Length: 96
Image (cartoon, rainbow, N blue to C red):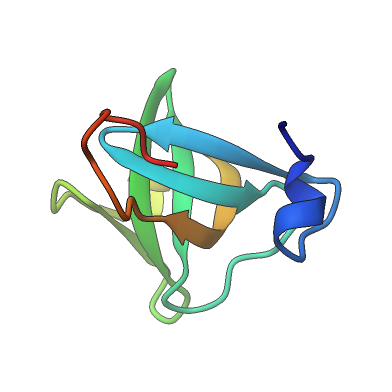
């Protein structure tokens, strides 16, 4: 039986599970990122996991790309990672 995400972990209704590039994370689309938070970005239609650094203002993607100043103009924040789902048993390939 499937349970709504809010019944399994303490989240708000603006949270949902995203699976991208081998990672499964719960993201909150309304939460403001803090220094060091992991986020999901939309970079002109391409999604990337990244880490936010507030001062100085920059974003570092999982691929090691450093985004600052003008490069941030085409980047949209999809949401802030609140939880990462890590498989306990990978026999069937399912992360949950």
